[in-house]
Each structure stands twice: as structure tokens, then as C-alpha cells.
Image (cartoon, rainbow, N blue to C red; front, top):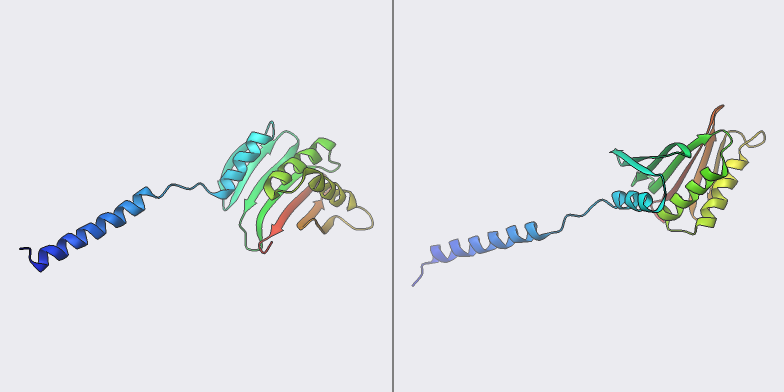
Length: 158
């Protein structure tokens, strides 16, 4: 007959083995932000994925001076930031539309329309900083003497 001490020892050993197996069999999950960056790289020609720092993945493309993808900030779930010359070319708008459609899962023509509308609103009457909301996306366009930039984000509650 087995004693209580042996039974407890074997029960504790069995529980420890079950916990160890549960932790070892859990699959390694990539970050959602890394998944989005991989999708961007596979769908947009010429896009290169750079380093990741503080929930921001830096990207590069010939049509943009700066390009980055931000994930899970305090006020937003995803953010796409792009910078170009003061008067962006249509290829820049296509890049922003392609990336925005993938990141925010909305149709490409909607992102294209919102981005062009935001950039074109900057000027003498509205100034060099324009904030607007288009199709549940927050868009902020800024420009300096040499650059124009757009930041597209979606709030955390949407």
C-alpha cells in the first residue's frame, strides 16, 4: 500500500508536468504590428521593412522621404506616417493609399480620396496644419518649407 506522502509527491509531480507541458506547447505568436509590416512588404513593390523601436516600425520606399507604421499607442490602434516633398507626386498618394488600405482594412479609393483631400487643404486659408476625419480615420497633414507629411490613424475605440 502506498503512503499519503508518496501519493502527494506523485500528485505534485503530475501537476508540475502538466503545467510545464502547457507552457511549452503554447505557440509563439508574432506581434500584430509585425504581421501588418510583412503584409505591406509583400503587397507593395519597393517597400523595405526597417528596425522596430517603441512600437514603431520604420519603413522605406523610393516615393517617400519617411515612412513608418505605429501600433497601439495611447490614443490610437494603428498609425501610418508618410513624408514627401512639399508638392507630393501622384505616386506618393498611391503609396499612401495602398499602405492605408492594408493597415486599416478599408477600400483603397477611400484612403486615396482622404489623403489627397487632406494634403490639398493645406494652404493660405487653412494654414500648414490640417486635421480632418474621413471614413472613421483621423488624418493630420502638416507641411514645412520643404516637406509635406500625413499621419493617418484610427482611434482605439473603433
